[in-house]
Amino acid sequence: PRPGGAVKSASYHVWDLYQNHTGSIALETTVETPARTAAVRQGDQRERGGEHQTRPGVVPTLDVSATSTADRRSLRIAVINRHLTESVDTAIVLDGRRLPVRASVRQIGADVDDPFAGNGLSAPDRVALRDVGEVVLEDGRYSFPPHSVTVLSVALDR
Image (cartoon, rainbow, N blue to C red):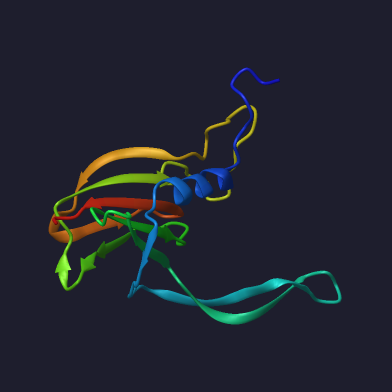
């Protein structure tokens, strides 16, 4: 047995982030973001040579989902920035108005230079969930770091 317990994979931390730090009520989202055309894998279907079947598709730079907690006191915005090298500065609007000034932030991958990094015995927490703490959203804006997964939690006025 390893003294610190099992080494958690990077994907474990993503599941943990979405399971434990998003809300239970899904909200409709609209995203305006740069995109690119890329080969999009089609499930686990394989070509004759063993390669996955793909089709050309439009892949947005940001993948966004929004949720509310059951008591509707907190908005949770989960964002994946797929760009390998560039942050994406984003205005976040809720019902036609900018978000409140403060948000708490949890991220995975923002502090790791290699987007293909993983965890192992020598670096068990290289890619892990980080509690960034509270940030100020200047004019409702946040800059999502490259190759990262982020959840912003915003308290809502009732």
